Image (cartoon, rainbow, N blue to C red; front, side, top):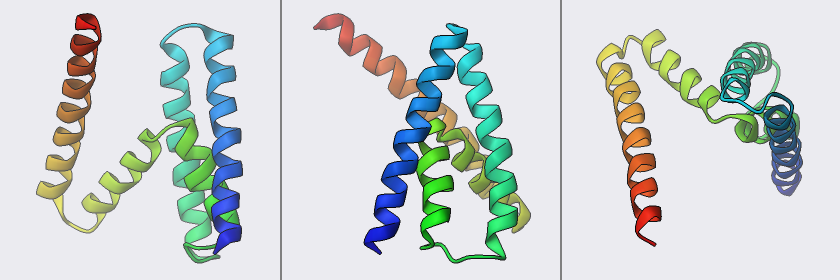
Amino acid sequence: MMTTYLAVAAGGALGACARFGLANWLKSPMATLMANGIGCLLMGVLAGWLSSRMNADDPLRGLLMTGFLGALTTYSTFSLEALSMFNEGKTTQAAGYIGATLLISLSACALGLSWARTI
C-alpha cells in the first residue's frame, strides 16, 4: 500500500511539472485546454487498458492515473466519472454532476477572486 502512495506522489510531481511546462511554453489559456484535452484522452486510454489488467491499488495505476493525470488535470477524472454514470444509465445523476461541477467550480473561483480583492 505504501508503494502505491509513493507512486501517486511521484506521478503527481511529474504531472505538475508537465502542466507547469505546458503553461510556460504556451503562456495562454490554451495550455489549460491542451492539458485537459490530453489528460482526458490519456485517462480514457488508461482506464480502458488498465481496468482489465490491474487492480485499483496497483502502483502503476496510481502513478499514471491518480498521480500524473490528477496533477496534470482533474478534468480527466471528472470526465471519466461523468461518462461512467452515463454508461451505467444514470443520465440524471450524470447531468446533475456535470452541472453541479461547473456551477460550484465557477462560483467558488468567483468567490475566491472576490475575497482576494478585499484583502
